[in-house]
Amino acid sequence: MNNFFFNLINKPEPVFFLIAGPCVIENHEITFLIANHLKKITHQLDIPFIFKASFDKANRTSIQSFRGPGFDKGLNILNAIKKELDIPIISDIHLPDQAKKAAEVLDIIQIPAFLCRQTDLILAACNTGKPVNIKKGQFLSPLECNNILNKAKESGNTNICITERGSSFGYNNLVVDFRSIPIIKNLGAPVVFDATHSVQLPGGATDSSAGESQFVPTLSRAAIAVGADGLFIETHPEPEKALCDGPNSMPLNDMEDLLSTLLAIKKVVG
Image 1 (cartoon, one colour):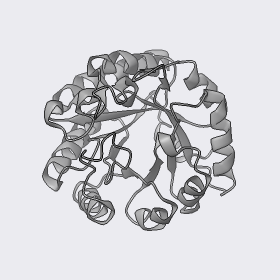
Image 2: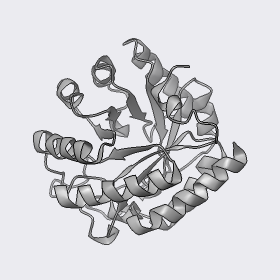
Image 3: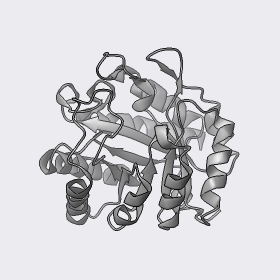
Image 4: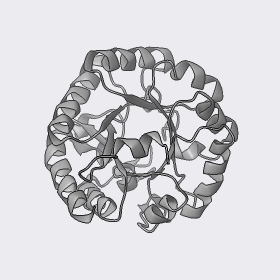
């Protein structure tokens, strides 16, 4: 299948691709620092890398929460980092009319989990011709992703992947059913595992989400072992000071050791 995401891992040695970066753009300096560090370690490990940062977190728990620099300023920051570091960029869009302008900067467009059933949004993203990563809603079963893929196919865009990010399990909790990875792959789509949002405790801090980042390595190892094509990891130099999703983010300095372990697992399982 001619798919952008499958092509990333079409190498002699088994490998996964990495989507990683901070949850949200805080400013140019820290966003660049994270992107530059990730570029260096993924280059050393020969892991295909896509840098992720959101220009707007439109689904924050509280109206007081930091959302990011916004659409125009955020895209400008991403475009500058893309050119400075020569790396592909992915970010979320939330409205259909954002798709065309975002596609002028983004190499891959992402659809947030809460919006994965928004037909107009999916079609607008796919109609740009750019690869699209659609995050599976916490409220969907793996097989229901076939409906998402059928919507995407209406555009004629085949460069689609699905990201598993856990399922709602009662109040303020998520659980990962790792059967979902082979199930979705059998639908014909590459599968990314979102290791950091899967340990999120949505709304768990009352006016914000909490998280259990200590389990990120555990879930990442399991995902690679069962055949995930890619990993999605949010990371920050100081997660305790991050302006969004710090409790479930990986410390930036721990990323190299984690990726080295995951690469070893991938080479064993093929």
